[in-house]
Image 1 (cartoon, rainbow, N blue to C red):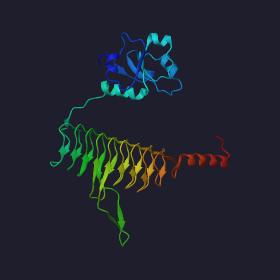
Image 2: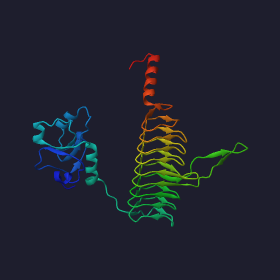
Image 3: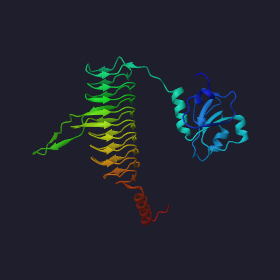
Image 4: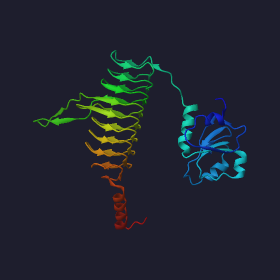
Length: 317
């Protein structure tokens, strides 16, 4: 990697910023955690980190992205350059993405299996041993190896699907007959994944039963997530590892589902909701609320319950 100058990064910064400290002969050629940095690293420091002052003073890095709460002494100014912004992590990730993200070439790996009726943008990537059925893949979409994309799946532009993920398989739906034997409900819907969605490894997204399963624009789904038939995940939602979304769950825009949370069939999650880690959601959650626990309840109620339990058992905070 060639040396990257201070001016190189200032040209791509968005929003307000200011530069303090040393500016002459400042460059970097790698990005690392602040504890592991060398004198040619770019680093960032979290605004609320308790020992951030100590870390900044000890790091070998010469260029640091920070917020306005860092105390930049004369001694630090003489040795280091500080780019002061409102959100250091966001600024850092944009710089790292611009200069260091691995770039993939478009194309279809020789070992991939593609149905003749599939529609795949030439400006996309299909990885090794991946299968694409009678489906549509948009522009600048990257599907890694060992994925299985069934028929009737529409994947938009700028989507990333990581290795081992299955999209469009039949959901789990059965009805007992007069002999108490299961008969399978037909799943003849599809899956629609809108633009700018990321889907992690070994995640399963079922096709709709009669309608479609829908992942809306900008949603981010982690590894090992189960998305059942007819689920709708709203715009810019986050669903984290090991979460389970039951059939016909609807999650409105900008909500967050924490790791290992389970949401019961047909539950509605409002806009800008946070579902806590390992919560079991059995009721609809109104807009803007945070719920936690088993079964999940509003955070204030959950905390009061935990305090009451500790009091009853004689345990102190």
